[in-house]
Amino acid sequence: MGTGLVGIVAVLIILWYMRKFVKANPAGMSYLLQKGGGIAAIVAAVFLTAKGDLAVGLPLAFMGFGLLGWLKTSMLGPWWPGAQERVSRLRGAFVEIEIDQATGAMRGRVIAGRRAGADLATLDDAALRALLAEVDEESRKLLLAYLNRRGAGWGDDRHAGAHAGQGGATGAGKMTEQEAYQILGLEPGANADEIGRAYRTLMKKLHPDQGGPTYLAARINEAKEVLLRRHL
Image 1 (cartoon, rainbow, N blue to C red):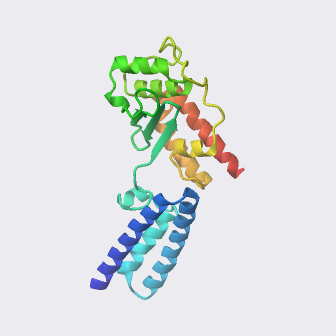
Image 2 (tube, rainbow, N blue to C red):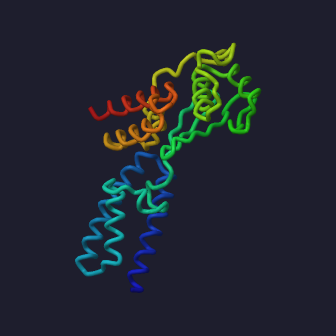
Image 3 (cartoon, rainbow, N blue to C red):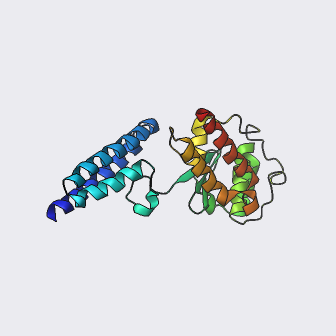
């Protein structure tokens, strides 16, 4: 029993270090590490189980299945790689919005201009109206999506801010793969199944038929299309 307990603790320590390594390195390397680690864990699990060491072999098997995407890692605890909060990020020149994919909740902050660094939740109506008049078109749409999701009743982007759009570009432009990965909350190298799952998760929360902002739904659709081109 003592050996089994030590083995389980060792597995948890390895997982913790793998998670730290993945966060500290390029996302392409994290993808290879995740898949390679899954295969290695399953091979080790088979070897240990054959020797009768189930206390270590079974946790290693679950770890391998989770890393390879064969299990819903959120069922295995918050310490498990991939079980942490998955967040989508949309960024304009002035505003950044984050979406918790599990709940659809939004948070945002100002990243440029007079109020750079301010949390959107801390700004009063006057400050928000002033911000709408100062930012570029994409940031304005992101800000309105956030405000309407929050239930503020700000209307759509055609009516807010008499001088909106004077702060910069008039549109988002062509989406890059990096932006698409951030919008879907994925790491570069994600496969078609992972892209599809992330897309469906977001759209369940943010589809216009569910009261979601039309602008965000369009960006999510665009992100999916950009990434799936790599798999054609």
